[in-house]
Image 1 (cartoon, rainbow, N blue to C red):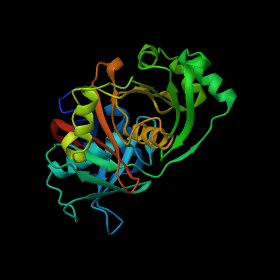
Image 2 (cartoon, rainbow, N blue to C red):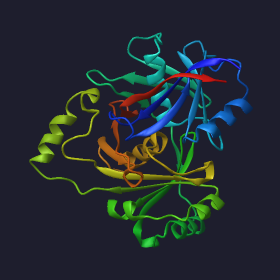
Image 3 (cartoon, rainbow, N blue to C red):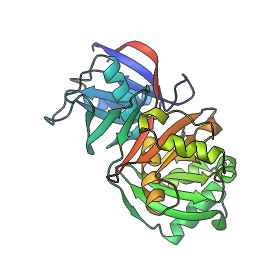
Image 4 (tube, rainbow, N blue to C red):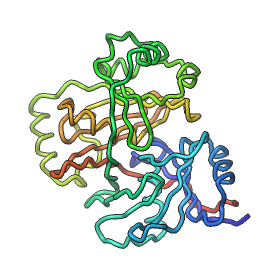
Length: 306
């Protein structure tokens, strides 16, 4: 066992302890899968990441992502938190304007936001389909929902697979009290979202002006507040509710923007029911690529024996 550089960072917040924590082992060379999984169970965080030298020539580093229940091919808050930690530890990307992360899903581009402490990752390609009516009824029952409270639904796959439900209001989202054992029995991760009513002028005019600026200049919470409220239930992977979820928000944005249900730029809120205040900015560029942005802050910096 060796002493290895280690950080715990809070992601999708600029204030410690209000986002989604992530454990990061900065050099996991020589660790086997069993050791990494055991340590991820011990941290008991939604994800723990292990950084390694890249295998792909164009990548800057490689990351392995573990939940207490198993390894993930990709996840959003571990992507931003790992990149934040790698840069803070002195990592130097091959390209000045983009960092390339290698993970089991492939290569993920991350950009540093000008004038902001935040980072943004390029959402991976999305596969989506309509869930069956029987499954939808089972999930609604586990969430305590009436079917008429679900306005739209999709199976979303960008590495992690989520059953995503658009509900009739943010209030419905925040009032949910799921039956987590029932959701675990279904072996399915479920994301729910509710859209806030659009704010009219003058706030709307102010928002339009903000949207005209570069993405990085608007990564923080806007005065007008969030556009959508999100919750993520992942009992199937050992986490009843995830505080702030990058992969879910990425696939939600791709789906909702494609259907015209959300604008090409919006702000998401997640974590209120867990005492958090996660903030994410979702933006689609001229080429159609969706970017998921937010701040990260280091809370613990030291050594771990592994």
